[in-house]
Length: 265
Image (cartoon, rainbow, N blue to C red; front, side):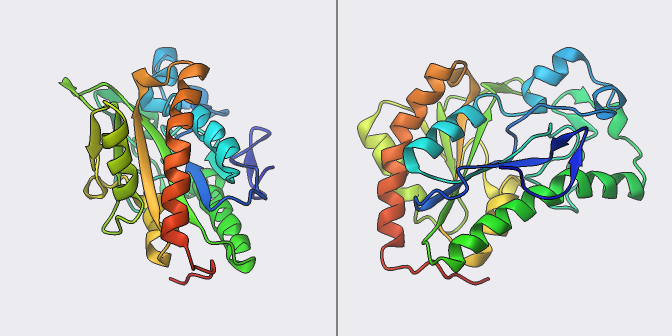
C-alpha cells in the first residue's frame, strides 16, 4: 500500500505494509532503502560503492522489519529513498537533515542547497513519510487499538575507526517501559552484548521519529539497532526477528494492558 500523493521518479516516497495489522506494535523503518531516484542518482556526486554502503541506508533493517511485521501482525511504514537525499529520522531543522558529509565521505551534491531545493526534498520524501505514520496511528487511535511504536535500524561494526562490541543496541528516551523488559530478556536469555542506549542515544539526535510520533503522545517506544554484520542474509534477518518478536509482544502487551488506544499529545 502506498501512502501520500507525492511520488518521485514514478515510485512512492513511502510504503505501508500490512496497514490493517491488529498487533499492538507499529513498526517504522526510516532508513530502509538506498534508492536514489533521478536526478539524485547523479547529482549527489557519490560513487556506486557509496550508494550501496551503510552511509546510504541501513542494510538488513527492512528485512528484519518485514519479518517482525509478519510475526507480530504489525503495520510497517518505511521510506523508499536513501538517507543521503534526506534523512527521515531527523527534524526539518536538523543540521544533518541533508548531510554534506557522512562519516568520512563528502556528499558534494548536498552542499549549498537553496531553500527551494531543501523544501523540494522535504515535500517529496520527508513529509510524506511522517504523514503516513500519522495516518496509521490516527486510524488505530480512532479504532481504540492500543499501540506502541518500534523503529528498526542497523549500524556499522566500526565507526570512525572505533569498533562497536554490541551485536544489538536498544535505544529509548525517558520512557523506558519497552526497553527495560526487552533488555532484561536479551541479557537473561542470550549471550549477546546488548547496548543500553548504545551505540546511540536520543542525545545524538537519532530519536526524532519516535519522539515525534510516540514520545510526545505518550505511546511506548523503542528503537532497535542491530549491527549490520549480523543481518547479511535473509536467514539472519529472520533469525533476529524470531528472537525479538516474542519479547516485543510480551513487553507491549504488559505495558498496554488497560490502555484504550486513545492517546493525546
